[in-house]
Each structure stands twice: as structure tokens, then as C-alpha cells.
Image (cartoon, rainbow, N blue to C red; front, side, top):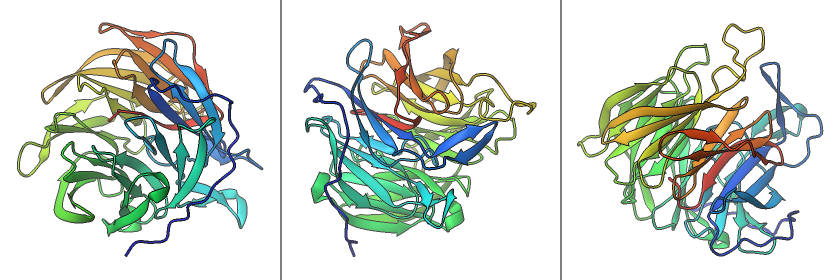
Length: 387
């Protein structure tokens, strides 16, 4: 049975800029509730509201179009944003909120903000109530469905879209609370969904049939603590990043062959660095970008501390990933997105509260030295037409 959705007009503070019709939109969710204090994430006293920054990726350099208040969270994979292919609407999840009973702590949230990107200025026009700890989001290829991984209650929700007409179609239990489903993605045909089960070290395969979700009982064994998933646009393979245990050891990617029946892991990539929270494929399926924290989020006296994270770029050849470039980034780095032409890459840094801008010419990554200032720590990011 569908749950009641709270859809209400909310006040939104933003720039007096409208979103150009030809823009390629990226939306960054920015967390103002948590800061990193020498390797420990701490709740801010009386934090300002979280924000969402709307960016035009279709111009060089990328341009901030607007910034509005919208609840978000750095907890969970940095794919807690979804943007419609036409750039008309965005969905921003808030996995955690300040505990009303103890402002020094956080508790699971349930809210997903609906942002009208075509209004002038863009604004939050409604709130979807999902399960506890909504995290990794994904839109169906036709834009008519939204999948949500409810990380704090072991479930996946599916909503019918668009916007203020949103209604819940299904809510499927995929495990215990400790299973921590973190990201759920559609395959290109819209008939299958993959869920990264952080607490079970597996990827669960779901069947999508109209308005229903079904657990196929196929649990693919991947690496330690799978987080973001990206499905290749040809539908034949998927890549899963594993954040491991954060103990200084190198982490991995798993390559899943979706063309085989049943789907299975057929290869691994040794990153050589730890904690790859951000990972995204280019829209043409040629490149895979990975954001590795590389100990930049650890205490400075830790033997695993490093001054900078790493942006890693891989060429995709069938089921093979080959590293072609890498570059230093900031601290406690999170999400990554490509421009539609694959030549611009944005990387979020929580500590610096910015998004670094890289140019990719097919041979090398160039830091433009023109980071985009964000209204808080960059916690999650997605682009219109992105994977």
C-alpha cells in the first residue's frame, strides 16, 4: 500500500538566476551538519541549513546557477542525488538529521527534497517521505520511477514520478537494518535493479515489473562494504566500488558481467588506494572516474594519513578497466561527475567545501585551479543525463 507523501511548498533561498534551457545541470548536495576534526566527524553546534548548489556543466568553466536550502547528508555514498535527463527536476536525499533529543548526535532522516530546476530561482517544491536513512538514488531510463536505498532500515523504495505527483509504488525489505543497502540502480532496460548491500558484502539483484519490486534471491559476492554502483550504458556490465574497513589497506572495484545468466563478478581492479566513496562512468561508457580518500580523512598522527585524496581515471574496454590518469584532490572527498562530452570532471571535497574542476583531454587530467565554492561540505552530486 502506498504511504502518504508529504508534499509541501518550502521556503528556498537562492540566486536570482534561472536555469538556461540548454544547460547541462549538475546538483551538489552540501552538508553543513558535520565537520572533520582531526580525523573524527563531529556534529556542528547550531548548524546553518544544508544546501544544494545547481551548476551548469555545459559551459567552460562550469558556472553556479543557484544555491538553495535543502537537507542533505554526507552519510552514505555520494550518489544521494538524482537529476532528470532534461534538467527539469532534482531529488536530494537526507540520510541523517540532528537528533532533536541530543543536538550533539544524528539520527536517521526520511526526507527527499523535490527541487524544481525550471523555476526562477530554482526552489524546493515538495518532500518525499521514504524509509529511514534514504541514500543512493537512481532514476529509471524513462524518468518515470525513482529508486531509493533506505540505508538505516534494510529496504528499497520505488516511487512513481514526476515531481509533486510522486507516489510510492513499492517498498521491499532486502535485509536487516545491519544490511545497510547503500545504492540502488536500474539497468538500461529498466527491468532489473542492483543494490549494494554494504553490511553483507554483496550486490542484490531485484526484478522491476511495472509497479512492483521482487527479490530474485541472486546475491552476488563482491568486495568488502560495497558502496556506489554504476551500470554501463550498454547494459552488459556494472562496476561496484568497495570502501573496505578504512584500515589503511588498498580497496577495490568489482566488475559484474550482466550479460551472463545469472550475473556474476568476472574481474577486479586493485585501486592501490583506500576508501573509494565516489565513482561514476562517463555517459558514453568509455571512462570510469573514482574518488579515493587515500587517508585524507584520518587523524594527522595516523600512519595512514595522507595530505590529499586521489582522482583515478580508467579506460573501459569490454570487461576490462585500465588506469590512464590520476591527480591529487582535497580531503574527505566525496562525489564525482562527468560533463556530457566527458571533457569536464567535478570532484567534491567535504573539508574544503568546494568542487574541483578537471579537464580531461583523453591523455591527461588537468586541474583548472578554479574550484567551485559550495554552500557547505560537498556530500553528493549527480548530473542530468549521468549514470
